[in-house]
Length: 464
Picture (cartoon, rainbow, N blue to C red):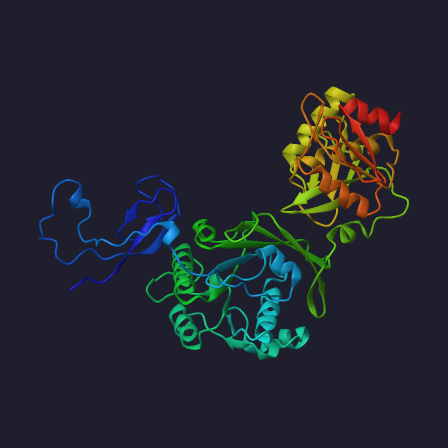
């Protein structure tokens, strides 16, 4: 007779096992890193002699068939269309049956709203959905459904946090999509830890993943984020799931950016843009028009436009730079939506190669819209915006800057410049500054493409 499974405490830093919880790991010395986990039971018959050599490692296993890949038969599962174009685009074309999707973001960003909308759309399309709420009462969820409309009141609701009850109910109802809000509130009675700790989150996520693969139900789970912006709980939570979606944007703004940081069924780093309204999140078909829509007809100095590739989509963003006289002994370097270390590098290049000293100036850099501009193609726009602020001379409103800035002051080419220029032309841009060695083979007719070799040539072209 097989022995029952037992629990142990494993260090999340080094993986060492401990019989009971303690504050410090004896193996690596880390504090507060022991998490409770379920340990598989050992075989009941330990007195059985094992074969020597390689056969001993296979003791207790079974030989299975190993077909060749060409002999594997079956049709690819059809994706479930939610009707939210931007949401389907980020997922790679729709919800894949049997997949598990993790949705993370700041509190109040719209995670529960978007999942309830998706459940309502799928329910209206004939796909049964089950919404599990562990944080809000059924009345609170109903009030949100009244505001959303779109058939949200037809979605089945389960107010439960016990994992065994959730899986039993889902197995009985057999929904096409299961929404769990949130994974930090769910617990299993096999572990003694409180809901939300590392062991509970990891074990509950693993069982939900197993349920998704065996039943074919697509599982969506909501994950809270830490102060650092990462999803709370173990990092292995992101490795377990098939897709990780992050909601970005300021809660004070009326639009949100949904970004796929991991996707086993589609492209990574795809973004979908939504506008928050009283009726829920509405997809924005043209993100460039949204990010540039509030730009004034007469722009002030320190404003430049760049074209970035987000996944497979070109997006135009406005970058604002401000260089002002430092009011304290040490100048400030403040970034919003841009890497601070990358800004320090660009300031050093501007000082060394163009003679623009920022040693006595506070530098503020902002990517409009709350979007993270992590691509090197934005370097040229950052340099142009900061130079414009230093000279206090505005750049042309219909100019776009695309290029990477090297340490020698040279402007390097970036990928997919043709698609970036096509998006710039569609948004009404008339001049594009790109690398001299990375000009497109066929430029848009209404767009004047200016190739610049280095930073000095760019400043000479802009300010003469």
